[in-house]
Image (tube, rainbow, N blue to C red; front, side):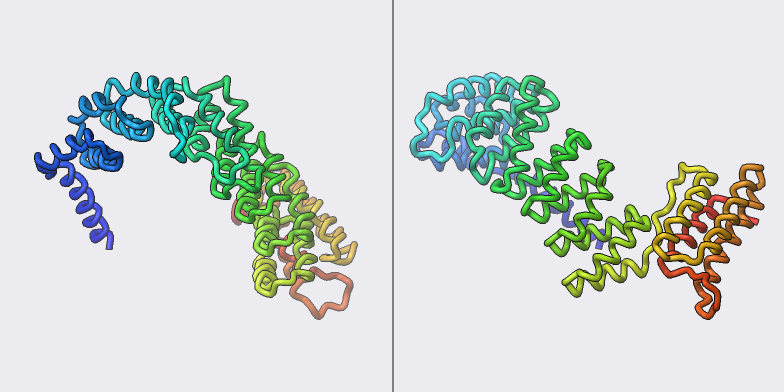
Length: 402
């Protein structure tokens, strides 16, 4: 299969190159001759063919007819001159920017500002930012339209990076497009991505606003992704609260998944269980229920010392006890004592003795959980077992084996 696709790619590449080589002299001359036609569309077609056939030898001809063309065809000429690296491209482009307002655009959907922005995309590639104001102007002109000029939108990151005097205006334009829910959804998505690439956590409040209140599901999902990526400090609280308020079922599922897979604390697990009781969609309910059954606590940060991990497990016992996932108090104290001994052994430099105690803790939790016939008050629920057993295992994974 790989050989087949490689063959296809080679054939296509060969055909594209071959096309540029096999053009006959008569066709080439006809294309060049068409540049002098009185018919607009014949000249437009000729300019496109020149680009397709890579006829760089037509540079002098294109430059000679440039000022006799309509503004849109002048832009096509500039496109070709840029493609062929004409040494005169830059001067022609700047002259076009200065003169394009002098033409009548009554019968054209594209106005002078639209064409200036198209040419500006080429100038930016030459690190010439002298027409940056055209980009800001066209976005301001079209601010109430559902679709913004795509050339201008894609130039905004470059403006922010390379043109300090317009950086604030460009940032404002990105923010405005994202927040305006009447703007084209793909452009809003793209601008949100630009904001993240440029500003990261600086615009966490924008991600939060979009996630909590926007009408577009895909954009809200992206905002959630950026909040997580940028380690938004309040995200855990926001998601636990939002889980019960969210109307969009796929986002409810996503929130529950993030709470279990990325945060995964006892409060998150408990909250997802409570939410599941009121989840109206049978499919979502079933999937989240399966996630709960397969749940394992988030793997512990490898930068934390084993001493800290044991201390946290001692604290975890209180949390598990308060959720009534473990009983009774004497049993909780017994487990704490085992971990305290393990911690003391570790501090004394005896990591093997520490391992023995942590393993004893894990075995005791496991045995009490499995012993459903015991007659005393000790118990460990499935929820308590998941947290105590696996967090003990994460500690054992960090200790030397016997």
